Amino acid sequence: MANIQKLEALVTQVRRDILRQVHKVNSGHPGGSLGCAEFFVALYQEIMERKDGFDMNGKGEDLFFLSNGHISPVFYSVLARSGYFPVEELSTFRLLNSRLQGHPTTHEGLPGIRMASGSLGQGISVAIGAAEAKKLNKDNHTVYALCGDGELQEGQNWEAIMYAAGNKVDNLIVSIDLNGQQIDGSTENVLPMGNIKAKFEAFGWDVVSIAKGNDMQSILDGMATAKSKSGNGKPVCVLLHTIMGNGVDFMMHTHAWHGKAPNDDQLAQGLAQNAETLGDY
Amino acid sequence: MKTYIDTGKKDTRSGFGAGLTELGKSNENVVALCADLTGSLKMDEFKANHPERFFQVGIAEANMIGMAAGMTIGGKIPFTGTFANFSTGRVYDQIRQSVAYSDKNVKICASHAGITLGEDGATHQILEDIGLMKMLPGMTVINTCDYNQTKAATIAIAKHEGPVYLRFGRPKVANFTPENGTFEIGKAVNLQDGSDVTIIATGHLVWEALEAAKTLNDAGISAAVINIHTIKPLDANAIIKSVKNTGCVVTAEEHNYLGGLGESVSRILAENHPAPQEFVATKDTFGESGTPEQLMDKYGLNAAAIVKAAKKVVARK
Image 1 (cartoon, chains in turn blue, cyan):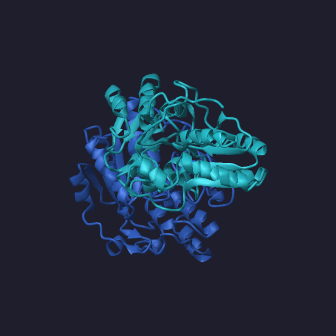
Image 2: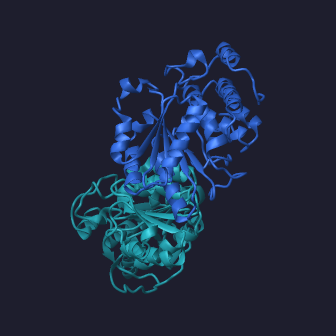
Image 3: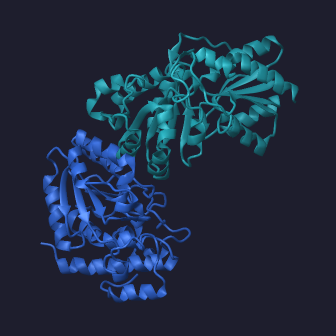
């Protein structure tokens, strides 16, 4: 049984990490990062079966691929706080010679990262490949991926979605961060995508909805349901309804903080709303 | 002069297929992905022998490249197969981010490269792929000249850790390199010694360069011929050594002169030993429909064009 309070304390600390990372370099993507803080904590602390340390091949453990690489601040924070690299290294986010590039990369050898992402729409394909490799290796573990909702506008996703269903890639669970926002505005205004649930189902996926994507228990329950559906001949899609900027009141429910850093006052406000729990880096 | 015998015309893509078949038997980590061109790429035998290691992705090249990158995680060695145009231009960003920048051990195998694809015309005749691929940091770029060399290269790249672009073609061409020869990535092959001009050729133009060297010899011009099967990393020492001896160079390739082998040779020479150079290549143009022979003649990509370029560059010394 997961200790929800403990997980939520970590979420609060991750929010602080996100805000402090982007504030320091006056760049980065806090909105989507904050919206997925609970999901990342749940994934790395409870859901995935992980081995100690990091090796690129990841045999004998679950894998995760972040397709919308711009939410790197939350990825880096949770990786560091899950033991992949020192938490102090978060202070190098987006700085020259850092392993914490603006968008995640294997190029600098940061433990926990298996694929560069940033140019959108490529993560599901990569996750399918890793899932197929696991099947060949008779490795009975699950491959997870996360995509943005706006990211689904990229055509490669639909090639991948078609492939995964047609080829019964059922050791794959892809979550979609449904925050309804993208850089230029709401997804409804930029390019309406219609009924995403119906689209995935029409392509032959099992779909699980998590209506409260910022509620820890809802995430844990929804992901457990998703896991229970895997291995049955269909890939699984999780529609994760999140609030962009969650946990910092003035950043919530807007695309304004998609790719904008807080100033000094805004940082202070955001941190005041999320008191230190596990210690700042 | 050394004599090279054409043991019977064969297509380079069949060399790829034969190499892949051997790899299937010798290396269980080798997997193959194809975007609805299994027959054209000569991947049928691998598919028949190892159905569990063959992945038909359909007409979805971007997904194919991403999947291949993902399959390396877990230790697989993916070979992707489609036409050169759809192997590069169509999926450049997928290769750039998921393969090259992510340093994944993917072998991008591209048939029907260049103008000798023939009648299908310019939509399918990519003449820019060498340039696209050589600009990607960490990418090895190979363009083989005949069946035997393509087979050897296919086998060799499985042992090389890192992304590779392997370029070959559709038409049946002279098969003259040794059967079951060794293939050393990045190592030029000196085919003829010569003292008046160095001809540096790649792919289908290598045989044409040998034919040109014979004609030039008859005209009293001694031509060295170098087969550059690996355009990146380029064997700079072999090029500099020969050009120091001859004083001028002709580069020959089935590719645009912008971004191709010729420009790579120019850079090596500019940095080390400047010398007059002529380019046998397409001159910033698209191709068109026609037979391979007609097209190679019209676009100046044959032995006659190399002879003409050699005479011109010798006069410039």
